[in-house]
Length: 88
Image (cartoon, rainbow, N blue to C red):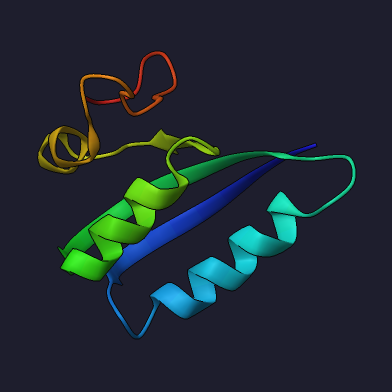
């Protein structure tokens, strides 16, 4: 089963623990689920928020990820997975 987790407004040290817990539950589910992180409207993201997304980028897909964030999360070896047709 596929799961969509929406991030709305901000991702910082106060909201990361909740996102972490939600993701953990789905990562550990049986059978494993395909997880999409949908960026609905991101007003602010802290360094910790970027670090967390970077940590999980190999386990999830991103939807509606802003160009600035996609570029920050990408590396030459491991580009961020985006769904076809998603704003880049």
